[in-house]
Length: 610
Picture 1 (cartoon, rainbow, N blue to C red):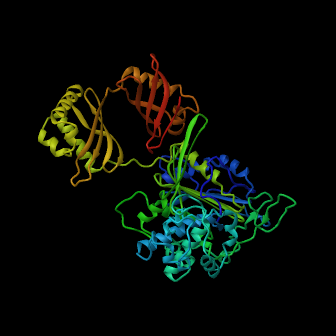
Picture 2 (picture 1 turned 180 degrees about the horizontal axis):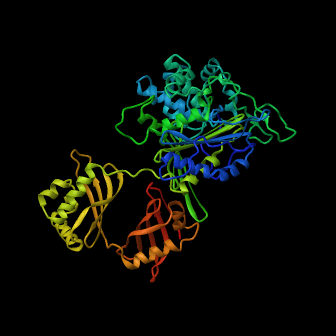
Picture 3 (picture 1 turned 60 degrees about the vertical axis):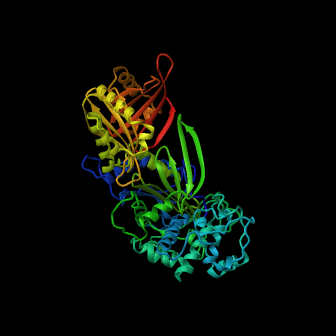
């Protein structure tokens, strides 16, 4: 199951040898379409771009799937599942997904944790007594735990070069390895290092705790409840007419067929690795239609909510696995004048990152002799995309990213905006009442006692009186931007301007205001509006504003205002496909636009020059 869980997003990967098949759910665009149908239609329109990327790779067969709001809305296959017969790839073709298996193993461990049958932070010898007395790499090294195994930080060495062929290892042989002890590359708990052995050991713990193999437990407790009837561990259970044969080429990474030299570049069938004790790190076989159920289940953990649990694992535990447990690194670069930054870590069986384009991203790649795969989840948007190929280590990362970026360019991946909670709306209303009629008792009831330490009562009264005189009568909050249940921003339209409110509430019940910022925005300052409109009308392709309008369509200025020091201007934009906030830094006596910042509803923010 070798291969790192993520790869550079610029990679394009995948090859085809036959015309693409029709989408599973073709649909013509139209106002009556559901969100899934709109995204499916947009994905279908991207087919030429995706096919061009597929053709740059050399996998005999490739399949790409898109899951939206719990449903496989679009799937497309290229090429053949078997070279000799030319049998095409379909939504029911079964591929090996390699390291994408790790998420199943992690969820199995978390399910047992939730049931009180094991502990993530207990020393491994609690469940694997063969490790009792094993020496660590340093005298002060902590004992390896399941938490460290699942987050690739147990100190075990990266083993992509040797891990694949250990997949069929019998359990007795793995136990013998443990009795001889383990060598560590780093001290447990200090660094990320991708170790397939860690998930083999996690699977062995599942076996010891449940009295059945990890494969049996995962099949019975995860696959069957999710209806994943085509997902198996033993290739012998895959119908021959549905199996994707696995291939390698002369220059495939780490060819493992045992042949030292290939006379030509034709695909050759790779060695099929059998099921064994290392399978929890990468042994599953599945079809696109089946795997879409897994993707939908993972995405259904978001957002946190009051709905009854549907299982098979608690939503909170599924979310836990998808969030960073071990930080990996941060990268930043520029591409076509835009800042591209990404922070990456590893959860339990998932890589997790934050990017300018997508915000929260959960991902993994898989690779074994004959197969490659890749999956990306966008929890905030409730969208996931995945690819499977039958070429050694050809994960198709680039094709998956191209599909999602193509949808993002059309502003189709925006998450729903959070509505304000009753606590926020109640606090905002109390502030507006104080603005129209001063009442010291009402203020003391609305704010935390610490607020008045920093903002004396007479100063608050004077500030509210000044705002009331400046703004006149104000209406109810019209536009909310909510960060979470207890923090958010509201915009209030008044007779002579706009009031921007930022509210932060305390932990108490009932909650109170602990922080309040009130900023007056003179609505639609003519010079400011003119400058913003010029930026919109004259935006060049590749600039921040140009890319914004490419994603969201034409935008108009709904509100505009300048900063008090005159060094920046801001505007709220209403676009054909949603809204955006624009901030422009000004330079020099003439106020020349210099730095542009665009913030869109998904909360992602990227900075760049104009």
